[in-house]
Structures are given as structure tokens and as C-alpha cells.
Length: 180
Image 1 (cartoon, rainbow, N blue to C red):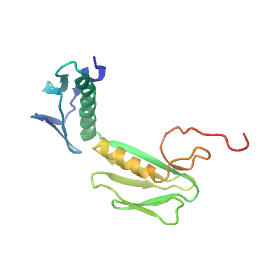
Image 2 (image 1 turned 180 degrees about the horizontal axis):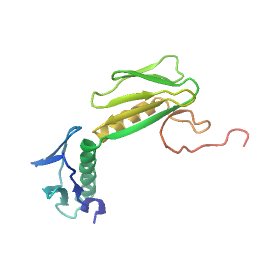
Image 3 (image 1 turned 120 degrees about the vertical axis):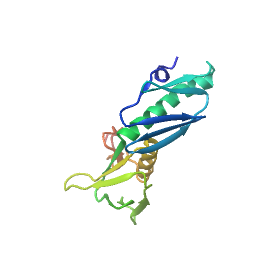
Image 4 (image 1 turned 90 degrees about the horizontal axis):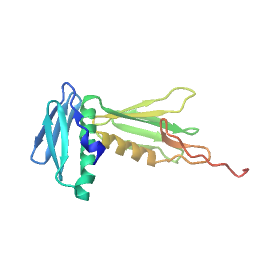
């Protein structure tokens, strides 16, 4: 049995969940999200979302936990929101934003200017003596993760000095240099 799929998703105050045909719509104070599903039955009872699978086939078992996790992420997103923080480690690495445009100086011959989706709020924090931080916030967990991965992909952290763009709190595998 899927342990994740069996646990119900609690619906907090101010969040509404609607199930129509094969589409779940979650509305809250931060926004609205929709997700289509197949291979499972979704019910809303007593302030909880219950996900039950149609059969014990391998496909239905794999979708059971997946859709329950997606629905839980949607409920948390519209009630609390999701945040990702990226840290720019390196001499001369800078980040600034004007509205939804992110301007990154990452040691290339030119700055990288990236348009961020309107659903994602972006904030850059630059304090003297500390690495610049790019903070992404949205109600859609998948979108925040995708934008963060795209930004990280411009300059992934390298294993010798750790220079590059990394997530705040990320543990990097470091290698010894030539002298070792």
C-alpha cells in the first residue's frame, strides 16, 4: 500500500477544493491551481481530500502517491506559498531585479537578463560582506522549482572552490585540489 497515498490532505481555513470530472481546482488567498488526474478517485469529505486508487495495478499504485502529493502541494501553495532561495557564491557575482526582470552578473562577458513568470515574485538581497541571494516566491511549487533550476543552470556550483549558484542550505560535494 502507498503510505503517502493513504494519508488524507487536510484543507485549512479559507481554502476550497472542487473535483469535477478529472480535474481538481484548489482556490485560496494566494491564488488558484488546477490539476488533472487519472487512475485514482478523489473525494472531498469533512475538510479533507481523500485519494483512492481504482485497482492494484502497477500504474495505479504509482499514481496513488503522486496525485496525493501534488494535491497536498497545491493546498499548501494557495494557503502559505512556496519559497526558494538561491545564493551566488563567487567574486563579482551580483544579482538585481527591476520588476520581473532578473539581472545576473556571473563572470561572463555579459550580464544575463531573464524574464520571470508573473506568478513568481522575485526579490534580490545584497548585503555588504555576504553573498547575494535571489528569493523566489509563488503559490505554484512546480513553477518555483523550475525557475530556480533554470537560474541555477546558468552557473552550477563547481566542486573545488564551490563557486556558482547554489540553493541556500545545499550541501556541495567538495574535492581536494592538485596538492592532495
